[in-house]
Image (cartoon, rainbow, N blue to C red; front, top):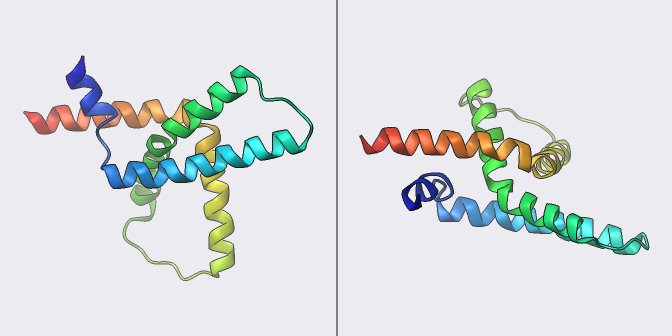
Amino acid sequence: MQNMIKKTFGGLSTQYYLRHLFFGAILSGLVIMMTLNGQSTLTLGTISLLLINTLLYPYARFVYESIIHFIMGDNIFFINALVMLIVKFITMVLCWSFAIFIAPIGLAYLYYHHTKAAH
């Protein structure tokens, strides 16, 4: 069981995981701030979902970046920086929002990849 956890949840580099965990925490903070400013209360279910999405966000982002790399390859595009930042923010929000659904794909791939590499 410990080997399976290491191959899946430990499959990303520490730097990559912490970088995306930081951005996921920022997104959670934005949701908390908007909820509290909207005079709503944070329920245990909401806090749980925020925590789960934040912890799984790096794996969801891994899936997204893998798909984009497969489609785009190593091509370089020149685009307005503001447009790029807006698109990047939108993709971050989407990956974070659906992390609970997207991340299992990344975890399964990491398990497969690290199991195959061990043989």
